Amino acid sequence: MSILSELKAVNVVRPKSQPSIVIRRNKLISKLHDQLQCVQAKIKGEEFIQTKYVSLKKDNGERVELAKQKRLKPWWFTSESGNLVFEIKYGSKRLEIAKGKTGFEAQTLTELETAVETLKKAVAEGELDDSINAVADVISRRIHKRTN
Image 1 (cartoon, rainbow, N blue to C red):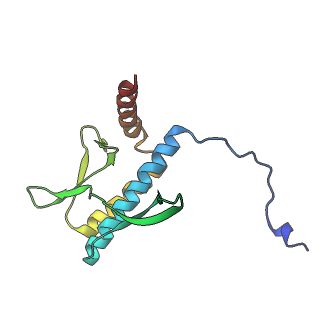
Image 2 (spheres, rainbow, N blue to C red):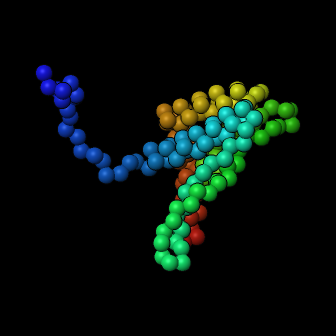
Image 3 (cartoon, helix red, strand yellow):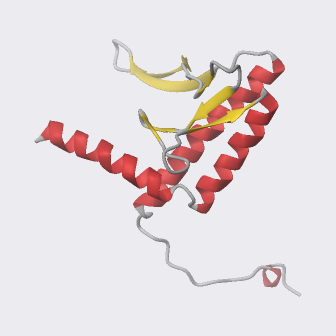
């Protein structure tokens, strides 16, 4: 028996591009993942520092990659009642989680952590597609208005 016969062979054509909603979902999931790491670091009592790599050109023309610290602003704050409030953002705009609601409350950081994980799953399943599209369209209109 051949080793390759254990695999399921398929004939498939790779798509040239993804639908815009899939790209938007992936972008939001990535940002939620960063926020989740920030919450987890806060639970441990550490500061979350994200690193990004920047490519620079030296005077002699040589390209060098440098590691820089990236600032990550938490999407949560403490409300007047003392609870943690988390708001989902797409770009600089807040997303509506439910009709007229842009945030959710949590008592503790561990509760906030599970809520952010739940949000990631909801975004992956497409439950916030309408809110994402509405905000993305507003941002897109602003960008096109400036360039015209």
